[in-house]
Image (cartoon, rainbow, N blue to C red; front, side, top):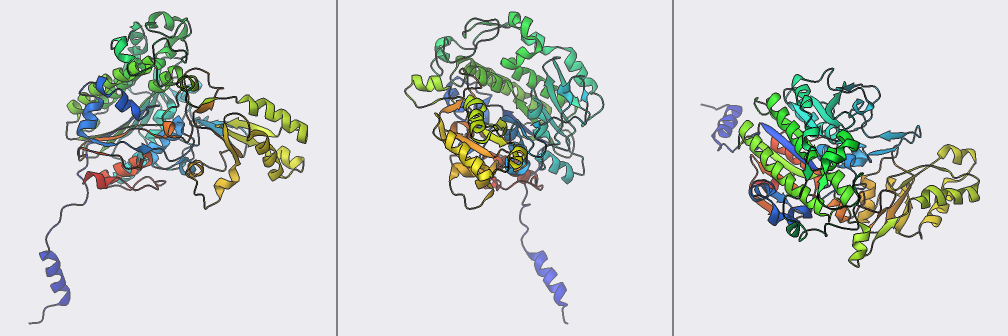
Amino acid sequence: MKVNRFVLILILLCSLPVHAQPYFPRPKLVVTIVIDQMRQDYLTRYWDLYSENGFKKVVNNGFNFANSHFSYYPTYTAAGHANVSTGATPAMHGIVGNDWYDNKTGEKVYCTTDRSVRGVGTESSAGQMSPANLKSSTLGDELKLATNQQSRVFGVALKDRGAILCAGHSADAAYWYDSGEGKFVTSSYYMNDLPKWVNEFNKKKLWDKYTDQTWLPVKKMEILEKVSDQDNSLFENKFDGKDNTTFPYPLKELKKKAGPELIATTPWGNTMTFDFAKALIRAENLGKKETTDVLYVSLSSTDYIGHFFGPRAVETADTYLRLDLDLADFIRTLEDQVGKDNFILVITADHGAADNPGYYKSKKLPGGNFNGNIVNVSLREHLEKVFGKDLIGGFKNMQIYLNQEEIAALGLNIATVNDTIIAFLKFQPGIQRVFPAGILAAGGITDEILLKYQRGYTPDRCGDIYIQLLPGWIDMNWSEFGTTHGSPYSYDTHAPMLFYGKNIPKGFTYDRTAISQIAPTVAALLGITPPNGTVEAPLIRYFK
């Protein structure tokens, strides 16, 4: 009897061994914690002082990508949060800084401002925010599509940009702190009224409770000074109302003048953010349905404190030790609410931080403060002498935006203007090089630093001329005290990248990896399409 060829093939296929499902079992909840301004070395520098159930628990029982970097310039808060959620660099997701100039209108743009929406929970402009300026999709957006909108996605932070740019376009909500009113708020982009549980949370006025105390170090000073500069450092800012930079800090007195804003510059800003995130998990029953939910928690106080005191301050060390305890408590909440084997936790940062140049010099290291007035005053005066007009439309993110209309009206050649500016600036103190943005639009760049600039370049939002400072130099227009960030150098690009929880093995690598790989890696773990601007490969090979 003849056997139909198709039937024979089907029989043979059915007789083949069955292989395991190629995808990982999906967790009930994915939580990504973005610690604003956390340098990678804070994990190792404070390691011996951390508890067993915070950072150590995640590192010892999860996977530590210890040589992970941001692959672009500029390393600012908004760009970093967008990078974590989209897997894209600013050239693709469009968030080229916390703010920038629109090259079409000449107007200054804040990354999440949206005047078409209204605040919910506040009457102030602090509520007029949305992800409208974000050009690519996020992990949460793709998960929403993959589950036919059944998954829920939330973002929480003190900073609006920290919550919004992580949560994405399709999020159920992003919540942030209105420091003028001391409340967590959102916008009409997400909803028309705050949920009952948010109103109840706001009524507690935790900002007032947490600042009704004196900030004392959690460890003995001699212990903290082993991993930090001395307490009476010369390189720190002073709280308004306090005449020195040393412990103790009488928060109860300081808040009489500062009001609800004060908590952001204390460790309890992180505590309150975690409190809100825990309330959200319980109220929204995250991780309780068949589909996976996503929560982003951005901790902003580490950035405020880092800027104010610098990365070597005992106040910064104390902040991370307290954060470690808050993290341990948050992990316990996840275990209790969702189950130990039902969630994935990712911990990372949005950028690092430079050492204070004065501190650098005290240790005989090269560095300095760049005087931004060289551009804002001296260069403008020079251009007026040469061309009769200053020709600068704006200066932001170490980029010069030219007044193109004025240049055209004067009949000037743009290359001549560029050459004049570059010739004036390139030998100024603290400058590594000055170059026109046009070279970033071309291919064939092999210089790794220039590649970082190229990955952060968007023509309609970036300047016409870039200024690259020398390593160890920062713009003194920020402050001579504390620190800032934004450079393409390792102290700003090197950030933690930790994975922990369901399907994550114990492991460690010092292979060079990118923060951009977080979103595609989580997408692979969930078996969904990565965000549409992603260019990096997922890190799944490390989890086999």
